Length: 266
Length: 331
Image (cartoon, rainbow over all chains, first blue to last red; front, side, top):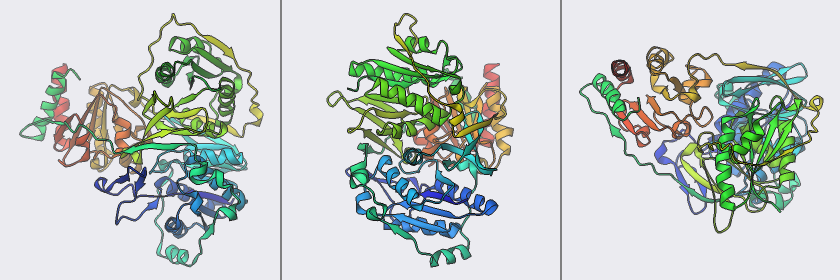
């Protein structure tokens, strides 16, 4: 089965908290200086799931990402992990997209790729945490969608997934091509091997622009966005933590119980 | 012309789910701000008294889709039915609570209705001047907050994080209108089959219902102390244990114990975080607790910025002493 994986390049969420920066005027989350952006972590889970399915049942894995030229980096990394092809969807008109206009471009690209049995996406992106684009792609193309799964496998003619629930999970069989979003519980993404990195270096990333995709300028980027961020800010917290004193950790533990009792919390 | 506020009023059996009461609360507040009605959409099979319950909790009008095919949540069937109700009711604002199902439904429904959506909101207000919904949501795992407006399309949609909005109090004397909805979903044509539902094994108090939660993080360095130190303490206090994503990703504890942005959202009376640094991802799940206690060996851990009470020390020594003193105090 051929699988398409959607990717987003994001600022490294593991970067130290003090390096986190936003541009309040432009309402953008900035990449911290000197820390390379990465593939969104949940998208790495989607890549890993795709590669495991390919290893079990054959087929081809194609990664597609909408972004600036710099997002080539994420696609190259996907290739190094073992993905067969990478496609960058890049056009000046795609800038400042929201979930709606992003899903529009990705859906058109997926239709252009044409051959697929399964589209795997990360359950959300760690920069804007929207978790909208995958369901949007499914709705725009007219495919079934299942979100936040911890397992994906092929079962006869169906895709069998485990959707995470608060008190367990449900096992679902999906018939025909579908969109599935993968959660971090699904797997531990592999690191690229040296051989993989060498092979990826030799591969070309395809670049498709608005004309190539045949998208309507009114439906992409900021023009096609249906939401607008009117304010972006870093919240401040009181920072009025009361520290429990004590000569030893044991004494502090006992004093904590006394204090919580005093406050009528326990 | 679009008018009023509509909520997806999720049900458990024949009753409103807790999240639906939270949506009634926030929905009523926004409807009052607009001076317009609150509409609730109920879907399920044998949802019996949920309509009157929604009215008691603040709805002026309830659309009820009651059919066998809606017995179990499925994206396709629920999106079709709730989408049809939204087209009929033409609300100005449409809210979906972020339960397991609402989290899945919201985005697909927004694209079905060709409208914009603000995901995972923690604050919703109506701007008195523009009369637009201002939806505020954490981004970048909670490192920043964004306020989102939807200007071009209706309804203005938002999914709402669980336990961030006070639940409406019921008033049995309230009156409202109930409208039955024809359900034209064919079960055979649904693209997804539910094979089985597996309940995670759990004993004692459920994490999301617990008044006291004691959580462990990466600093526990393995599964052992969750069960040797944290769990006995939680049990003694009638609480439950939780974990940071790091501990779940390491495989130390099952995924159902994860507190955070993509795990459980908890708001207990007391949340004790042991050896948890306090990443925004984690705080998204416990930041609404009444009292947060941080126990960490690192005096510079970011969690102290969010904690009400802090102990700088080794949880291995602090927690057993805490438990012993609690036993003494509580008899």
